[in-house]
Image (cartoon, rainbow over all chains, first blue to last red; front, side, top):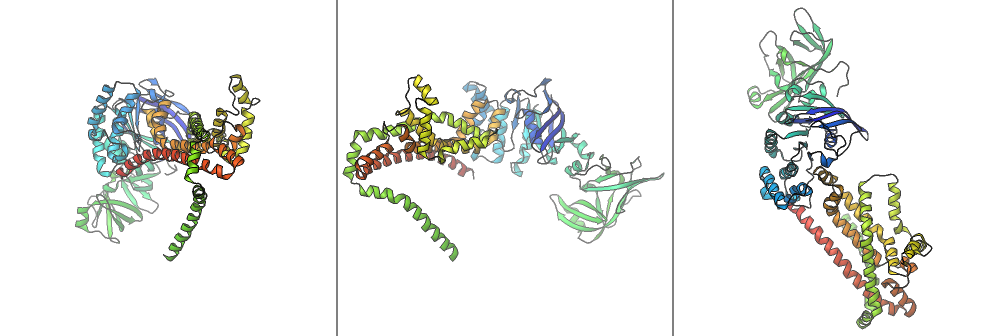
Length: 357
Length: 269
């Protein structure tokens, strides 16, 4: 198991602060954050390329904070793969085995096994400059995996490969993890985290601001930054009004949300996913249903259909499918209603008055 | 279009004038010497000895000093340390010094009374008027060419390949010899050739340290002083031709390697 305790590292104007995390054997841990959040620097601390200013790193109960990088047993695959351009693929994969002074036969056997595993056997005689992004990715993985790392660190593994190859790389990483390989994977893509991780840590400005399962993080973001990361666009700062009969939240622009009965603070931030909002001309039935009038401000095609911006005083972002669009033919300037049940609204755990990201 | 064409014409004329300025004196020298003069001079044992002596000392000086210059270049490319800019200034200093002044400075250092000279004398080595002294003079004025070219080469090596090798278990020395040096090789070889070529053609510093044994530039000067230009010209031609052969040979070797890399890059596109 890998455990870091309150790691701190000053890097010019930027600093990693109080990084504590635990990764159990067999975990697929995804560190999620924008570029510049400190994810790569954290990987470099874990594998020993840099040393922390303070804090501790433990691997399988042993402190490795100042252990040499060569002796940690942690593998790192860089974002740009860092293949050795002057060596062939075979020589690249054999490099760590030569360092370990294995016999020539043993090296050749292990290189061929790794190449077969990664499906790159036909590439063994080629130089890295002749390979595609996906092929380079597999070579870099094979080169690291032949060292049997206790933990595999992946720095943005999908960033330098074509979109068409991402699925196959995702499948390969899932297979590696199923076979018992512990993985820490750095990315800025929440979709990547959802599809691979069993645990997620969200990094921002050198700190881990939320940790948990991907669904936990998606459903209960601790602040607006994490919520935005999880793809949520509808945020409403409200004053809560509770009475004997019902509870509601009212925005500055007087949009009123019906809420489930519960204890609410005086004010807070409500969020709702774009796909949880129904857009129609007649509204949705149900006494408790929120039906809010507005005017369509913009219609933008998206990967799955259309994103419609509805101006109801406050702005609502609504995702609809192509089929829904064909049936309803929504146009800019049209009067519509946005509808959603009270329990679709979630309250962000962000304390009142906290700086928004 | 017309403006563009005029611009091209002006630049072509200016460029041709500069090329002509370089080639005209050399061509004149070749045209003013007869083939029999050159052949007779080439057969002169003193000329032959001085040419080979020049090549041998310049090559030895380059090889010996490369042992320290290449690591220095790597440090300048990879490490940050206090007074790094001062260190870079010191490396460049021989380029801006008048070479006779460099020779005088070096003479004070390697003569019997000098710091290095006195130590060498105790070991039974005389540096002044000796091949070793000539090698030191050649190295002194030509080292910046090797150090700066190799430094640029090391700086261009992606640092991540070195970091990747570290994570794969390699020691720093293995990384230097298997990752950094092979990737910077072209620049190192190019610097090596430039240092060799510059050392070979050195006169000012060498003549202060050792008039004898005569290297080719000193021999040419000596022939000019003693017998005049007609005697110095064939010796110059022979030295230029030999130097050119070696220079082109080394350059071709380095370019061959460069072409191999480029072919791979092209195939990747």
